[in-house]
Image (cartoon, rainbow, N blue to C red):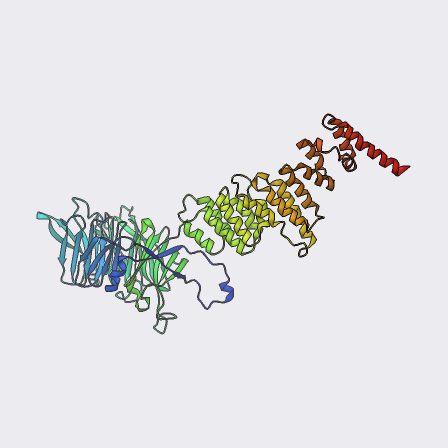
Length: 618
């Protein structure tokens, strides 16, 4: 199955020997993420080594030390078996036209090859009889009627084109005499190349050279390759040994400068770094640089001979820079490689960066909102993660409010923040019946049903009756001999509140009554539980039992119960109790409901009261 391996990096801004205080500082979220390209590339690298890579939005073209060119998709799979046996030795550079229709390659075998994917009409194979280190195609090579230009670099820069009678191949030497040309990059009208003395730019529209940018470092150019990258059609990035320059092509406006090119180059940023640059690319206004540590004074790589290359994101200034992030990369075989073994290629429009070594290709890209949420979760910053998901849930691919919320609830439960988790359930679980039931059982498993009880929904959704019964019974399970009286009263009061707040159709009332009667056998004097029993009896329409409990408790709700359920026929023998409890309400009720209460029974009850008073006060 096609795949791209996740790739682990180490943020190299901290070393293992830092103090505990420094390690305790808040970790900064990385800017980039990394994936190792695998699939068919793995089999290629078992038998060969990558020497160069060219990237296009359609495909990757990988050149090898055995002279092969492999055309792969962006996850490392072969594209229609497009494998080109191009050269007899190392492929030095590959160039692709803007449409991805043609590939040009050069090699130490002296050959330059032009290969078309859709037609062989413009295929070319040229032999220069000397090693060719660099090649670049006209970005518009694919266009019908174009001159089919391309430039090659050996000890001179040569413009190749088809033209004249019978479209014969013609060559024009653009520059020579300053050493081997090892790097060429072409965009729009401009060709940039590097030789031992510096970087030059040629303007194809005027057929003139417009600048020379000197090397300005003392390192051997064959050991520390010049890295060129066009940010756009007017901006060239240069990373060479320990020097970085950002150059902008501008139009000359001085009419008096008649003998000068119509364009010139301004260096807008120029600074020295404390590492070697293996590759450079743009990321907005910042720079991405693949770097390699300088040797120490003893001639070995700092700290260790197996130091890993780093991908650094920096903000350039005129003579300095700020490091935004620096990631040390564990590429396969990095222990054996030097600066020139690494390459950095990019797709600027997609912010993709390909880190290339002989036995590995890693693709780096900006972290997206999903990655941001994942990082927040990994660092237990759930509230911030929830805020991001709520704001951008429609654009997220990996995260949603439900799954993240459940993870957060599990986290809170593991931290014993039960009340906070219970409150959050309302927000996270919303109207999802299954999720609510799943969460209630989680609370039950850790014996925390009392925490979630106030937040369990009573409608939309209505949960299984067993859920409500389980919660109610939780408040009745406390052992009177094991728990303080205050706690028992609190549980009993909360039980009563739930019985009154929850509609009786949510659970089997008789089941709760049976459990409550069992508890009252151990706690007969608990008025909260007795009041709850009275309410439950009334829900079951066992009004005589409910009335008896209310009268026993002398609870004010007794009159409401009588009126609500028309129990006047059941109170004729309880007039004395009602009068003793609340004489005014009892008299008012009797006078207002004379048609519902047999008067002879009332008279008999009142006569009994009179005889009692006469006996007491005679």
